[in-house]
Length: 613
Image 1 (cartoon, rainbow, N blue to C red):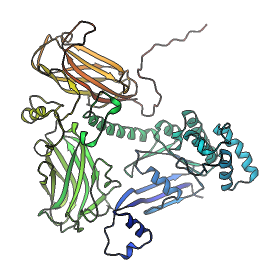
Image 2: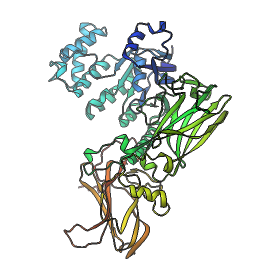
Image 3: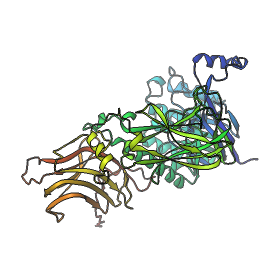
């Protein structure tokens, strides 16, 4: 007898995105296969691909990942609700699945009636149903509402009843997909205990999908992490959760850098539109003479670098590589582009670039990069890993101001990592973009070595005379001295304020004020030049606020940075040289990814003492 509950081999799921609604109807009835001249009527979209996984009986498997990573698609295939496009799934055991709220129960029936109907459907006798009914009511704690229609239940009440009914008849395989997120913390704890008991006493297998990493670690003895339809990591819960947490922090870092470019005093009204905070870079592959290629070229990876930091990456041929909701993606509209279908060989995923009779004879792809990453970058580097067959392929960048493509270079024949320089200053800043600080942009282009200002491409909420001194850059550094937008609770940190004084300035005051999202001040630090041992400042310089232990609690914050004229009179607002009002966004996280306890806004250090009578 096998000890394997679920065996998955080379599993993939592809959806067809139709250009016209009628094509979907024709496909459903199998008519399109007879219309052989209409080949380009849909676009492929892989939600999951190349998955190999074996789950043992009695395992409690946690499945984590961002929304749209492929988690729910996998569970729907395992339960039989969705058929795979390729690969096989073998399930050994009876499956109970809680996938979505609102399924399985009739909204007009009472809770009691739904309990009886559900248990009867599972084959229980009236005597068994009566015995289980009381157990369900007792565990779900819905005594007062059990005879009310389900449609009157809250999401949390529904989750209580659905979970209890699903687990009262001990399943061999239990699947929970985010349903418990609608319940309260108290009941979620009861659910974790019940699932642990199921695996220990009956040997049931549990597949648990949740964004609550604390619950995942508490329940599961194994965790897998999905990213863009591909299995990213598989192993002990703590190890995988730490890897996932690091990736999430990196994505949040990029988002916060981008968010700094769209600022407002009213935090609730922040608009994070792509046009405001991102620069879009449109590239394409095309034949050297501008026509279709004659060979078949395997394009594997596309990466965009800012110095040594990778700021954009496309694994060509992998799931979601052509999804426009992603920051970086290829454009493979059938009939228009020369990208081929996703493939895989011994080196991994790829798409062929060949003559697929696309209208525009090219293979385009796009990167969306926060403008804040581009301020200190005069040039980016595009890296392409490809196998070119019998010919070279040109790489070009679209120049918005000229409404045409500019050639960056040639991908040589053979298998190579190819690098191409992208000139930001001269080619990639759209002349029509909405930028308020035109003078600062010109300063960056003509005298970047003198004032390396982070305000170059910003549209910010600022005030002050700015004639004597300006703030040129604000940096947050972690315990290792690395620039970041994510600080850790109880660890060392630095806030660096870089400035440029056009004329000698007598005893200015530097301020860094931190606000909660509600607008309340969480903390404020200020220091005068005199306190720093310098009566007068001139030219370039920096002020560093340094702390050995960060006492702010976990959460999101925004900060204002200012240089004021020294004015000791109480009750009077000092005159400002330069104020960047709520321009720096950052987050504070617990050092331990699995520590989900809310310690509050401030981690006040205290001494404790035990006194015995």
